Image: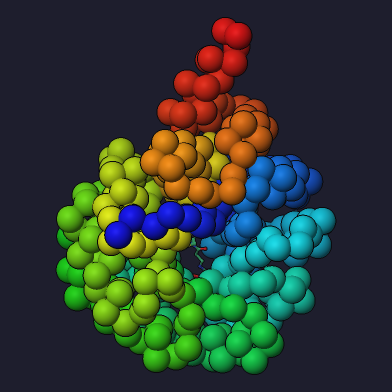
Length: 302
Ligand code: HMG
Ligand code: MG
């Protein structure tokens, strides 16, 4: 059942940097994207076309997209919550746009200022217009196991959002543990709910590591045959509207685990660690990756 090849989407430039108090220059963000693609990442979530009043960290979205020297075979994704975001995003020619909904009503209101039903109504024209423009569409389902406001989220709520997304033409759905509270069986139940509406090749996991469960949850999803995951270089990440949630599982940690299991990701771990050091230094801290920390110590000792 365990896949032989896994695709990782590095969401660090978006999920990671949206949550940083410290402003980074567009040039630093562009350099991060360049380092990620040089390390072998084929999917990078670059930025989001959201309201700059809500998330000022992503206000330089168009500048960052314009500054990237695109590498053939690499897909660049951006978040688009509504038509205004999509229209702005299309000018930057992303390969994929992401509509982001939630399985929790309260989180939906806090994050995108509308109910789940309203968000789905808003997404429908975004999905149609993106697909008409030849751009792939991914959907994210936040709070798929737990919500900072409502607590445990039933898998059924994930299934309902997945069903609606499928019906409107969203091609791929990401099951997101926004606050990193999920444990393997809960994550498997949320995945199963999404898999009731999408084939295995169109479902990914997006696990924040707040409670240190993300690698275990990744392994649990792998055992179901899921082979696509969002991860974040140096363990960057968080959501400004999910207080206390820390970063996504570090890309370095997932690559190390998969490599040890004989699963190919096409990613050069050393180059990835260097990318993590680059962005962590820009933020004035060390990478939040156990693997990076261990291998950097080993390098220093050699
Ligand atoms: P709203 O205030 O309800 O929007 O926000 P509105 O339509 O009423 O418009 C209000 C103002 O925002 C207007 O400007 C609009 O033009 C502007 P004004 O007339 O006041 O000057 N506006 C926009 N500006 C730029 N780009 C846009 C846009 N839309 C409206 N796209 C809205 C609704 C969705 C815009 C807002 O709530 C928002 O931007 N939220 C984004 C929150 C966010 O980015 N959260 C983090 C990403 S999600 C995440 O991290 C989870 C994920 O990682 C998975 C997981 O871990 O769970 C994906
Ligand atoms: Mg996230």
